[in-house]
Length: 109
Ligand code: HEC
Image (cartoon, rainbow, N blue to C red; front, side, top):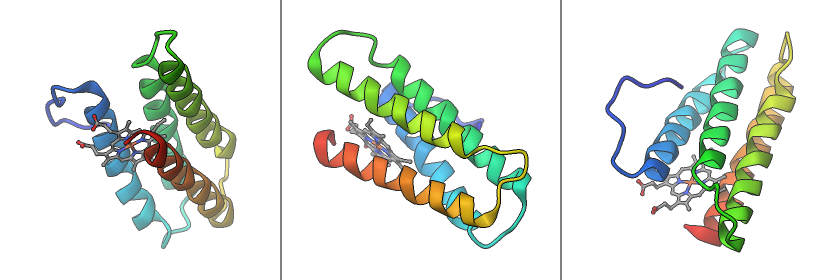
């Protein structure tokens, strides 16, 4: 979610720090039932995915793959956003998103 902390010098690390912060909030949200909380978290993830995409505008194979992965991440978060996201839907979306974190990290981190 939006942070008031200064951006880290490395923009990828800064985006990752945002994703880690949102993940902490998402874990806390697993014990609530508030659709507005779910939506705020999914919206933050989608924005972070798009921020990741913007970091890899180039045409190298690695850059294209990272952009595709971040794009998929943003799409997963966007697709789960509903006027009234249920806890089950949020939990399922969170599971998919975390597996996308892991998949990208096992390839590139
Ligand atoms: C499309 C690829 C991709 C996705 C998706 C992704 N990451 Fe990362 N992440 C990376 C890469 C690449 C690094 C290594 C960055 C570096 O060391 O410069 C990284 C590093 C990190 C770090 C360490 C940052 C640091 O300062 O060293 C954290 C924390 C992190 N990711 C959290 C997450 C979380 C949480 C998610 C999912 C919600 C996620 N990432 C999703 C690619 C991804």
